[in-house]
Image (cartoon, rainbow over all chains, first blue to last red):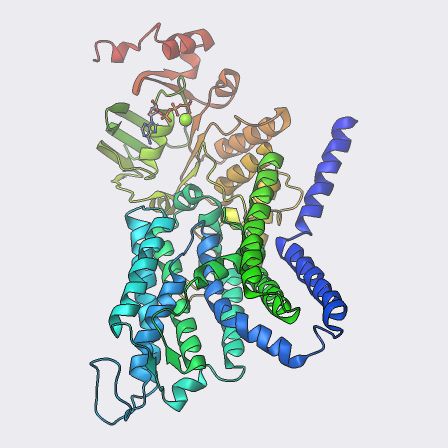
Length: 343
Length: 256
Ligand SMILES: Nc1ncnc2c1ncn2[C@@H]1O[C@H](COP(=O)(O)OP(=O)(O)OP(=O)(O)O)[C@@H](O)[C@H]1O
Ligand SMILES: [Mg+2]
């Protein structure tokens, strides 16, 4: 009797779990935070937070560039890894690609001077993506074949890529891109690029062998290996994709500001990781999705522009942001522990 | 010799100074079910890992279906027709049943290299058929493995081997975590294999089970094969004597 009832109770629990994906938690969080700021808006400034379309646009724009990075970081974290180098890759890729996107007549920031011609836009774009790809490839090879922890490998890349960004022009900023290049970052283009990237990788993670193996590796690397997955090659691919997306974000960022500086993208890696974890991607690997990350990104955006809206000082904003990151990780650890206890 | 499925000669594995497997000579014939017994750490799983290419052997020769093989990895062994339930189960907890059954050999709709598109429906259907064939009952195959009981997980791992037609099945302690009913289920799967003439290597600590199911019993002790006994010529006490080292097989006497 009791066995039967406990069995049905178990089945019920299983059903409930199935219908409660972590993305839903994130969504509820998003709605909750949005309501809080709406109320605060009326209480403090006597106006609606969401009433202003301009504010919403700025909010989305602010986070969508880091969102592009976060899509790559999501995949890395699903494999059970971490990528601390994305912010520095942004710096290096922005500097290098921008120096190929400068208007022909403008004095070059670097030794590359091809005279009075503008290079076709495909060249800076290919170079920007290439920089990210190369950095990601090095990350991936280090992690997959030398077996050093992803934390260390990407920490090294974080420092080195920042060095490259500074060395490229000896610290000088690079400005005056061609109009075509600048267009990558103007208006709502960054948001559109983010959406394309997010949808593409949502589909890839969900419907392709690449996605399945990414989850399998994060879930149980030994099992993945025993099932015949080439774990090393797959990890290289994942980190390369993450690097390439950082390269893409770099160009959008540089094009938006019409200039590249060696300090660009500092701390972006942490913001991207935070978005990912807030969106329900488990740092233990194997769980999460791009949808979750997109929701995490929105939560991030609402919080940042919400704080600005209620005129909270930037210092407090940073302090609270740090708290939110830690809270998201604590929640993830708590979820993991609960899962471990259940199974 | 054409009825030999698998043969190992001088199969040896050292982990640094640990001689986990020492010079194993083993033959498995067509349709034969063989049990491997031995104490914890005797080298049984190590033996399986060398045959299935999970690890690279220190030395020795493996012949499968008449030709010498050097599997670079478990997928090679699988493609050659060796299906294995590993002691560690090798399941990805966050994936569901069809995902796990087809992990590493997914059915695909459109081939785009690593970005090939998965045939979810095909895999689901084949999973349902495979589970039916093995009479394994899983409440909801779209559930992540994590949410299943130890017995159900084991059943999934076993169904994985049974879903694919294999030339040789290896099970490393397949009933270790199972209740009475599930154990019976697994034993029925094994009997079905026997009826179909599919050969099996079964690693088990369960004496009753071994005597119920197999034709021949091999005993490992401290990395060495110490006995090779036809079921008719032995009994439980005899096997235990070999396992504990109280007795050593005639052909192995004098071995170092
Ligand atoms: N990767 C490894 N590195 C070092 N030693 C190992 C490794 N794998 C196994 N061993 C050692 O090899 C020996 C044989 O281990 P094996 O797993 O084959 O035992 P087993 O017979 O399967 O035992 P059990 O019944 O507990 O499963 C043990 O002493 C074990 O500690
Ligand atoms: Mg074992």
